[in-house]
Image (cartoon, rainbow, N blue to C red; front, side):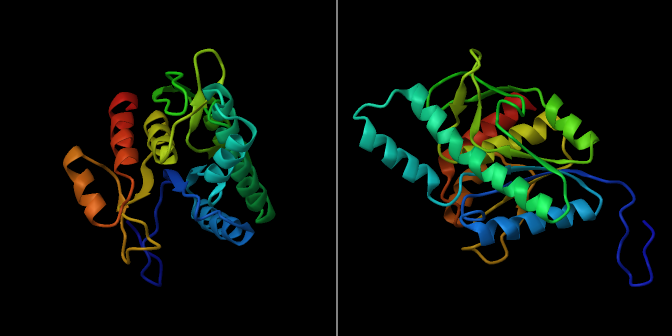
Length: 231
């Protein structure tokens, strides 16, 4: 590859990148803006970027707490609707922050992003991904910001993928889109110095990830299954 006078490598072709940001990244307005700046930097490098984002901070816990205060036995369908709202809130706010940086963005629900699930309540699994709306947004030069940990059941109702489901969303989208890169860390970079990006996960590596500081064994197992089923 040719290089410029400063010795930096010039990438001649744009990459399609899926970036996943957890709830801690967008826990408050400052975090949302910082996350938007990371996305904007990728866009300005010339990449096509698709983002998926978790609910803000402890939003999922707060929503579950609210549900328990109004109903002793909340139906699974209504909990799915409630919990998916957390991711949609984060996606909308991140989209607004991107607009503020001059980057056109579109917040999408999991259903709008084309993520079809098996319909199981509170722990749905991805069955297929049909990302036509995401591709259309990318063709317009927009950044699709997909609410994580959610999809749509065959009957059209919202479904929640469970704890850690935003990781599954990221990999499912990457597989469905044929992305060049899916940015998922081998450990929480806020805890483990030098955490690196992971392109591929196999079953034997799951246990190593847990011992290295990643607390989401169940999520990663589901993520691996999603790669196998969707890719």
